[in-house]
Length: 396
Image (tube, rainbow, N blue to C red):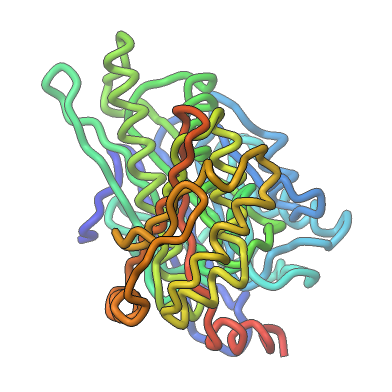
């Protein structure tokens, strides 16, 4: 039985389909509800996007969703009209097995760009995956959507309304080609709470804003990013007031942020998990721009890899983020060590700070500005030789 349980009324499975050539790895996942779901999604903003993104985006939000089908090993992106036809066919095969409308099935794909799907294998395997789906199949499904991930990524939250348990559970994949909006990742979040499709749309948009849109590994925005939220109401409980909705949103945010951090901790080749806190900005957008500039800087990321407390790289990245500011507006701490204050360098023992960075996988960069009250928390990784090696021959 999975350590991370599915909400009531959901089942999942992950099986070997053969999309990933030359391996015996699971590469086809299904997530199924036993009843209609309110559903919504958030997708990549890359104008070059995969066929599954186009198909699923057109189907959401809706109040009658039944399932999600995902393959790994092939992104079905940059594949023209054939790609659209294949994505719709994946959904149609699943819909037939579930006896529901084809539009009530959502589809996603991840993997290499520019290759056609082996539809004969998928058509034969999707009914098998549905037959294998159980309330305890989440770990297999999490395994089946992995590409270069080294671990499965799952999260859950449970609370009570009217003395009855309500649950949100999510699963995602992602390790590289990670950048807002969103990261190169796929995520399916399921809940047995009873909400409307419009509430699902608003809820997932808020959750993504402060989670999947606040992570970066390499600054490369994917063609395939998809986050689905399905709510089937099987708990019989729904938010009745603002306090109930705040509880639901907090649980949804928590699952999304947990999954986002798992992506960064599993970033390809990474040796450090980096949290960037930017505070004291006029608007959230300004704080976000500064955090993203720091997170995406190869010089910042390589300095962290080398345990080099080169604070000038962080401060200069803040300066080109497109936010009006002066040097004296900025102060910087790294892992609690004050390095720069109000536009001037502070004395510090570089050897001590470097040893701290070397000895700790987690790094906290705090940029404190004096412009306002808005803030953002952002997560990234360092950039290592292993990342370059992993991505230099990805397709060859």
